[in-house]
Image (tube, rainbow, N blue to C red; front, side, top):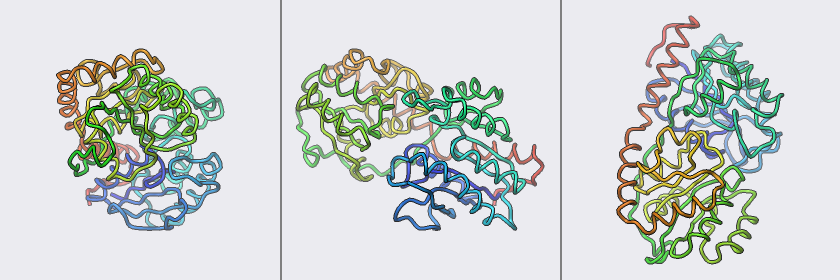
Length: 388
């Protein structure tokens, strides 16, 4: 089967949506002919063959950061992707166009599917449906709502990465049939714990968080909760973003000496922290799914997370995690303190979390998407789906 993946973000650009796409592409490319159409960031080649797939990157306006897309870059991706995709598939059209994010990728993917006669599968991720930190979130901003609705209702099949996103997408677009396909992460080879290499004391209880430093991640409340929990609880923040300075100021004022900012780190640095920390916490205002929780669970960390959002598909309070209402500093502080004070609780949650995460695999995810493709192709009559 010839598959065109359209996502305006693909590693090293972007966050979880890009990582999810690459994980899927790596699996699909073992059995199918896969092309990825994405944004060309600074220093990246126009074309390459990575992860077993043909990666095609189109130039856009104003993309200056790896982790964050500007509005001009998202808007300019649509015409650039249309032009490049039309040239790529002029003679040998794809069987399936699979678009990640109803906006901004959606209009480009929908146009290319119509032009080539391919089946169009759309996966809604999170911010393309609901982002409580943005005034122009599609569920509050009519022009974006119309764009999302047009893409979703016109697709041959629509998937969502969690029940939360599926429900929100149904309410937003009035499309009844949206299938949930859970995300998954590739498991890295984890190193041995080495707190000394990270400058962590053996006496402190290190809580790790990994996130872009943006308002949706709720880091302000997590910092304040760390201060309220008090020593030996400390917080290591991995990631960068526009709120770093204000968060550093918050930490200095409300959790002095208890918060460290590691900035952006490479995979080795992230994995070393995952195996060396005592717990993981991220109580976002909203998560479409939360791949980072799976990474923490795979590494054997007990997790503190929000009590609403896509992560509640696999995180359950008191069973495999502690959940708190986003923004509730007191509740988050109590959760951190409980973990610091109760070794047996930490062990029980970590063991349960590891079992849950072990069942959410890239191979299973890819098989579920392949089944979606085959149904969409048959319904459209594009051709007989093949595995090679």
